[in-house]
Length: 109
Image 1 (cartoon, helix red, strand yellow):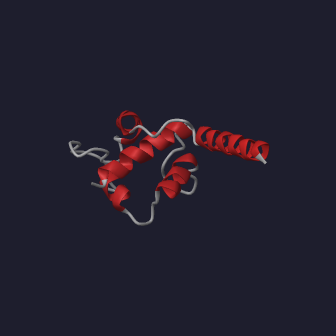
Image 2: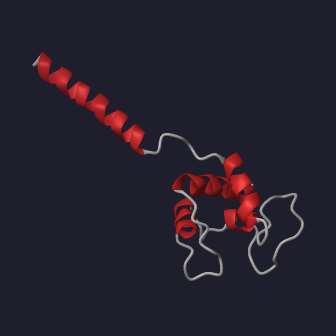
């Protein structure tokens, strides 16, 4: 009976470690997202509170971040597959997308 308990306990620890490592390991970094936005997005979008000029035909990052249409998952999916929009496919990695989404959501504050 003691052996069964130890085995289940070990399996539980192993499963917890596997789930933790499957999440990508690191949290999204909004500072990195800001740098991505400045490089790729600021030509069209108002991507920061200090930016004064951009296209008036696209929403600001603040508007996108507050929008109920864009959950983090929907925004990440759109950035990965921007087809059927005027926005170009930037070819961002999943990590870069997560960073950019974190930055956009931060602009909603």
